[in-house]
Length: 459
Ligand code: PHE
Ligand code: NA
Image (cartoon, rainbow, N blue to C red; front, side, top):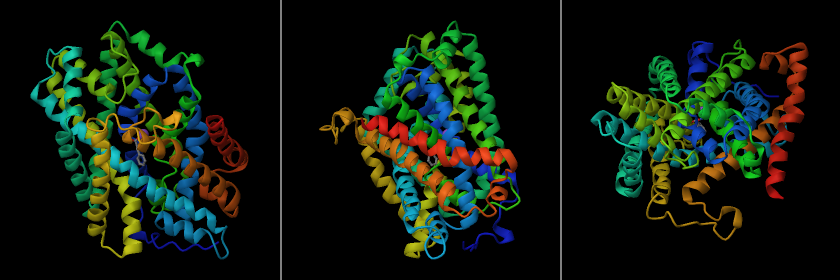
């Protein structure tokens, strides 16, 4: 195999294992944990869905996280160039290069709707700080969220502000500064989530919330629910999309990838479970519907902020931290697109970020409209499975439930079967029995798990 590693110059390596963990965890922890996990758990009936999701994290998420980072470090370049250097000529077959392309297209599409939701957190910083939740009841707070969704101009404005921030950060190459700041902010987000869970413990519905999340009732889980759980395991860890390949290319060889990947998965899963534990008790305490969709956290959390003392400050800080978490994920989504534009179009970094960002912003208008003017537009409505899905639903489904898990499948197969075995154990950071077990999981269980979920959903 070729080992061209242009990034592996001492100056451009991550300063430490910690720096990589921060960037990869910054990509992982985001709206997926705090916004998406609770609402899809609510829509899919709770406990059984959470259980399947946790199994997917362990059996599919972590192995792919390890494999993708390892491939990135071996290739040492952007995802497309990395896949090119590890395939063809004396490497593996060229078909694997589709992994790189799938990543660039999926990152592009995911950012187009992620930015719209990131805009919601901007709006909610303002609302919380202005004190509009103080003393408001569930109905009033639900109506505020409804009014936001109904207003395409307001959604467009905040989607634009969010994209502008992302373009600025990526285009000016000030990621490292940001990552150092995030170093302090993410533990604070964790602390605030714990505080929200403690608040939820003092409602009379905490036990009910815990039961909803952790006692599995398999009669509530559909085959589509299993696909959503698999897709979310990929989404929440940012795997199968080239992001970790890009970040892995900067990773020094002495860093133990297996241990690092487990750390990231534990942090990410911890944040998601805390978010669920904070939100579901509030859902039940206020007589709300767990399956009410993407607005779930934007209704339940403001209710709590409106009731607690100091809720104005607490709420504002919470949404600022949610915004920061969303931005560190969003910049990782723009990275594969920017690298592709730099390599293939010869654009400068700033120009790539601006051009790529603007096209993504434009595509995001489809998501903006799907909450109001196009809320009755179901582009694939003629297929029963997609009957009620809006443009936003379809984009989310395509990226999270198809492109990311299938990208993960290809990565597991590539790393498990096509990549040279020499030095693989050291590259991964395992030896002896753990290494052999890991390879069995990566070669058989991970691909079989993904394949079974897809086959079930086809028939
Ligand atoms: N993992 C991020 C989250 O949970 C989302 C993400 C998806 C980031 C794909 C990068 C790539 O919010
Ligand atoms: Na996540």
